[in-house]
Amino acid sequence: MKAGIVGLPNVGKSTLFNCLSNAKAQSANFPFCTIEPNIGVVNVPDPRIEKLEELVKPERVQMATVDIVDIAGLVKGASKGEGLGNQFLGNIRECNAIIHVLRCFDNDNIVHVDGNVNPIRDKETIDIELQLKDLDTVEKRLEKVNRAAKTGNKEAQTEKALLDRIRESLLQAKSARTIVPQSNEEEVLMESFQLITAKPVLYVCNVDENSAVNGNKYVDQVRELVKDEDAEVIILSVGAEADITELESYEERQVFLEDMGLKEPGASVLIRAAYKLLKQQTYFTAGVKEVRAWTINIGATAPQAAGVIHTDFEKGFIRAEVISYEDFVHYGSEAKCKEAGKFKVEGKEYIVKDGDVMHFRFNV
Image (tube, rainbow, N blue to C red; front, top):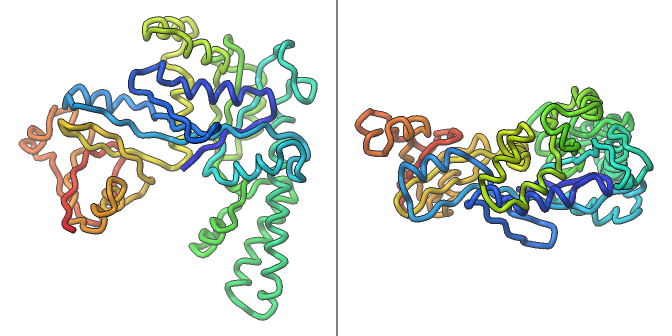
């Protein structure tokens, strides 16, 4: 699961990506590795794993991760191949969610590609390019499905009806994510279309250091614009975040954050938001060898969660032994949770909850 950082040139995308890549500076447990020049695997900050580490004292700790992709800046005409348009659109199509960075600060030394700061115009520029690309995709698919629909093919008629709704929405400059599938069949079809504007989006308002806590007039404009989009808006001073990652000690970084009025780096807030955007959640395994956070889809069953560790665990699943994170911390150990009756045995139907501490029994 990957979240792609998008935006116009010079809005702070690459600086933000570099901040995330240096997230190890915020915590000793924050490794970062580059799979390709523009893809980073970033650990998800989670105070719960630190607490489990404190209680269990394992040999090693492994945090949950999220893949962040730094995508080349988009310009007008990208949907027709302008700039790095085709590469940009190809990269974003491969992502599962979008982190849209908007410039919300004034600085005469940083040139804006369109001459002046206007996050509303910037957002619309990108939205229009993505919508045009999706419109092209939808119309090509309609050409194929129209013929089959005319013959009375029920599946083709269902697909045509959904495509027509999406096309109408795109023509009104509304993204495909505004279309709500009316059935399981439509949900499957929507997924198969792989439309760019159907992906969930998170808006990052890149502000000056003084606006990092409460935002500014540009942030207010963005919030008003996206209020009906069911999308989160995060305020981040990317320049200040870059300065924080340069500081050597934890104490220095904390002083810097306190001076800004922040409790934690904005990069940590962003990583957690991206994780949530991708509809991911965490369960833990906790033993003397390792305390580890495992990433699963929200709504995953116990066998599916076991399969994340190894496919054999899912195939031969017998049962899951489950302690809630809150109970584990309250009682301090697995043994004490058992004594208190907080140790549960769950079967194949169990839906894993965020923060569950689990062991699996399996037979292959």
